[in-house]
Length: 130
Image (cartoon, rainbow, N blue to C red; front, side, top):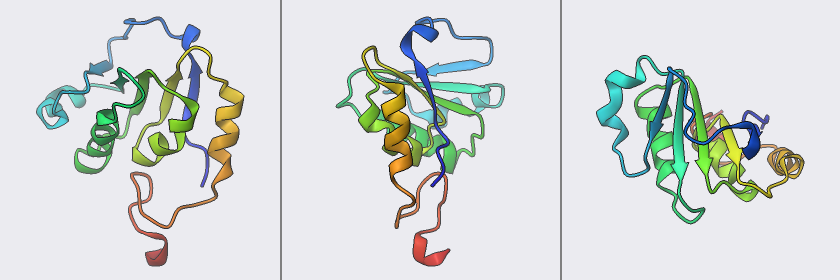
């Protein structure tokens, strides 16, 4: 599996400084209700208020699989490097790491797995069907 998630250090992104084509979505919002806004967005930011709250994973998977969003899906908030593989598999394409997280170690974790048996947002077919 190739590393397709871009890691961003927290100081590189100013909190709340979304650009004109960036759609920030709280993790309690039904992404289906945002179809019209997604048409003009190049980046969707999904927020993890704490690392134990996984609702943004479901939102990312819905954006990719159900709504066909092809732009950047960025994880923000309490993002830890041990979440990166699951983020990549559910459709995230970039992640702003929480302060204190080592991006280089995150890259190594992402490169650790060469593939998965189950399908995911990037490759819907399971390994046996490929």
